Image 1: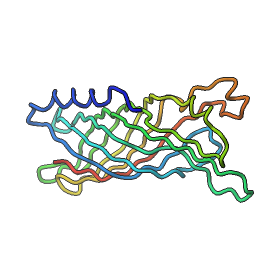
Image 2: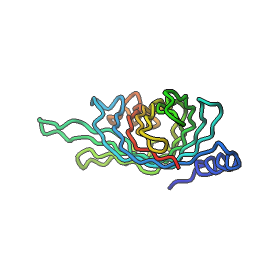
Image 3: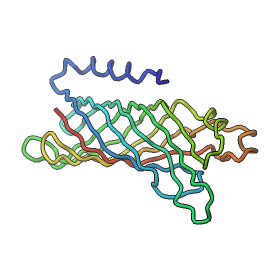
Image 4: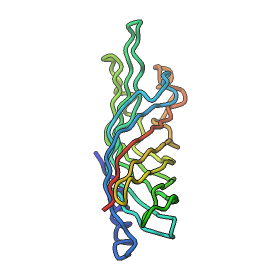
Length: 206
């Protein structure tokens, strides 16, 4: 079950900026499209949901530092198999804390329409499933890592001062699970699988 410093990090960040007049808070919800390198399938075939909260503090006129706490569904799904072999689906659920720097451009009235952002994200695995046509995959699930570190980049277009639309690319720097020779001998992926995903969400800043 979820036991990690993500909530503590979020609350500490909030306490540091709560007294600042340049701090803003927001919420977002959207969709993810995920893939895993090394699973013998291609394309962002695994859809999922994403949502969370965001706190942002203004560092300079065109630069913000923000922190999010988010829930996201990731994984991978093979395309339909015409030969009747099982369709493999990886399902992973994460609670993550991205730390993000944003650069703003295209000033309109009293706000900037475009925010380009990048950063790092710490994630904690809260659920993992591997569906392979009813085959017992418990030995693989036990090898999956509980912690994740990712890099991310993307952009948000603000329709108005409060409402924006975000597209983001997220790539893990840590392999999905710990590999062993026994795992490889039993058909596990030699490269231990590398996860990445696209996300699309609507953001409202209060």
